[in-house]
Image (cartoon, rainbow, N blue to C red; front, side, top):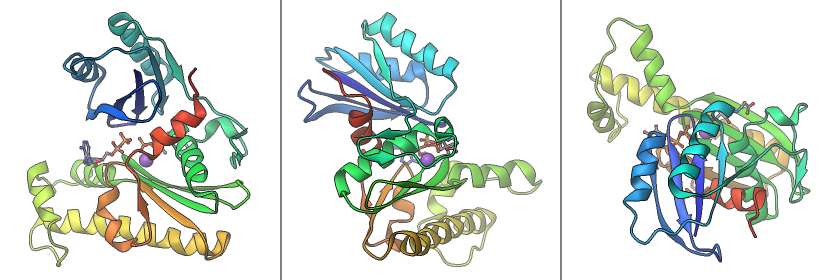
Length: 249
Ligand SMILES: Nc1ncnc2c1ncn2[C@@H]1O[C@H](COP(=O)(O)OP(=O)(O)O)[C@@H](O)[C@H]1O
Ligand SMILES: CC(C)(COP(=O)(O)O)[C@@H](O)C(=O)NCCC(=O)O
Ligand SMILES: [K+]
C-alpha cells in the first residue's frame, strides 16, 4: 500500500492506495501531523510500503512529518520537487523553484488528463489559478486569499466583526443581501471568490482560446461550482499529479 499526502497550509489531505495504484483504500483530511498518525493507526488492515507527498509547508515542517512517519510506520517518503519541465509540461515561472508545488503537481495532473489547454483552479487557504497551453506550456497564474484568509482578516482587523464557524456555515445557505454581520461578511467574501474565478475564465479564453478544460479542486471548490458549470470538479487532482511527479516502483 502507498500512502499519499497533500500537505497544504491548513490541512493535510491523505489517502492510501493499493500497490497497483488503482484504488483508494482509505483517506481523509486532518489538521495536524499527530492527527494524521492517529487516523492512520485507526485504519484497519494498513500495510504501508511507501509514501509520496507534496508539501507547501516549510522544509523543516515537512522533515518533521516524514521522520514521524518513518518512526511510526517504517515508511520512507518521496517528496515532489520543483522541475523546469516534466511529463510534457514546462514550468512558466521565471524562477521555477518558486512555483508552489501543489500548483505544479495539480497542473501536471490536469494536463495529463485533458491533453488540451487547461485552467486549474485550487480553492484552499489561498486560491490559485494556473494556465497551460495545448502544447503543455504553463503560462503562470494568479494567487489570491481564499475563504479562510478573507474571513480571518476581517475578524482580526476589525473591532466588531465576530462570529463563530457554525454561524458562518449557515450564512452561506443563501446569497441575499446580509441582514447580520456573519451573513454580510460570508456572502461578501464568497462573491469575491466567485468574481475571481469568473475573471479567470475570461482570461483563459483570451490566453488559451475557447477550447480549454477547467479543473476545480481544493477544500472550497464546491463554493464556486455553480458559477463554473463547465468545470470538472476533481477533489483528487493533486494526487493524480503526485503520481506523475513521484512515480514509485
Ligand atoms: N472535509 C473538509 N475538511 C477540511 N476542510 C474542508 C473540508 N471541506 C471543505 N473544507 C474547507 O476547505 C478549505 C481548506 O481547503 P484545503 O484545500 O484543504 O486548503 P489547504 O490546501 O490550503 O490546506 C477550508 O476553507 C475548509 O473550510
Ligand atoms: C499559493 C499557495 C500558498 C497555496 O497554498 P494552499 O492554499 O494550497 O495551502 C502555495 O502554492 C505556495 O506557497 N506557493 C508558493 C508561491 C507561488 O506559488 O508563487
Ligand atoms: K490552493
